[in-house]
Length: 320
Image 1: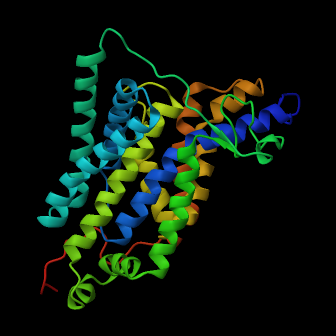
Image 2: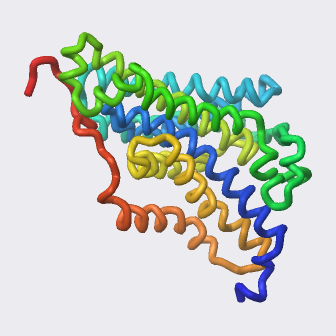
């Protein structure tokens, strides 16, 4: 069946790469934020809710602002605002991070569904296509170029994608080469040593948590503005939890989270591949595949996952 299908054509591989990017980029943004949060010692289980809130705020911002950048900004602001709840209860008060994160996710699911249905119950509006930036010369390369393709490809993507990739490189450099990055790593590994050096553990962890919320909001906004062009309460579909796994498997290295995000993005876009290749695959299997892949990756690489020594542990000065 596979050999007889359209699986080896240029159209198929162009669709596969474009679909993988489209589905993987929200994971990349969110996993990048979670990597910093985990390195600072905060396990942000509430990413799913922050992505969902960012998706709703991004949709509303783009819809009323008539500009995708208004949506991206609104999504980032919404994610950052929700992360302040995590900062207050977990970083400031030292409450359980897992319980608080689950509560945030459940609250955001209920809040976005309620608000959206109250505002758009009858109209159910959608957004138009997002403008893309095609890199001259490179965008004309077959398969990876993407010029003229509806979903683009590697060298024909919305501007926010290229800015996001630059941000990944900048964050990776900051984390490894600057005092700020050293402080973040110390907050997750040796918070007492960071405190003894005169740097606030609370402020460092709060910064990492807010950054994670901001990136989760951007990932959610990308889903509703670019990927779907609309909002519904299932638009995130578990991507927040997948991003947590990606951040752990990336072992605190932002560049690795990019590769993992694209891998999972390709699994999430399997339905589009199958349609192009004329392969009949059960819808239930397609929806289940990314989570099966998560379990498989955890079994194979889980022991190599990096977890900071003080991850999810509240810091109390003088406590042992």
